[in-house]
Length: 230
Image 1 (tube, rainbow, N blue to C red):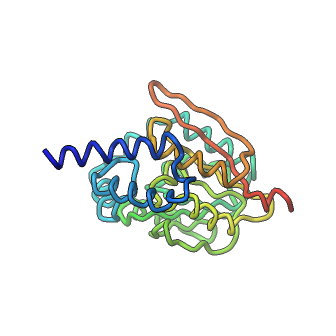
Image 2: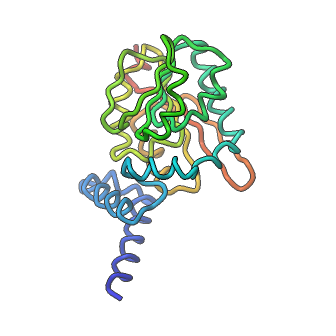
């Protein structure tokens, strides 16, 4: 009985945190960490997960259904190509390469992809050469090598433990005029809350909503204000 009451109380706190943007309040950071820890403990599908969980999910083929999300991938690719054709790209949370498999035909100067799961990355190692590098790394702490024209978070930003601060850190690895592109599933409260906070910290330079059957996503291109002012 007490456990059930505790669970429902936390669900209400979580709903209020995302619905009313409580992250902006003086106690917002502490509340956000508490909500994130509770989500993780409950195994919410749109919250941070342990590496072992990601490895198990990729081993079991849990993410293969994303192959069918064709409209979303081509929206992302259109943004990537429009903002810097043939440039240098960094993908954080690349999974087993569903975006790269579609993008590679357009050509690029350099493509770097990282994912927390060894199982996911193993499939991509065959592509590694002097222009392409896929490696296992935790997006929460990964330090990019060099600078990039475009940094992509394809349904991955909201899995980071501190998404907006991570965006600000990764933005330091953008070339002048570079941009960050994020894809967010609109049925996820956490995903939309993260996007809302990202839009407060960054400048939105373009955004498109993609719908496929009953699902929809927002693809958003962002630039840090200091880059816009150069």
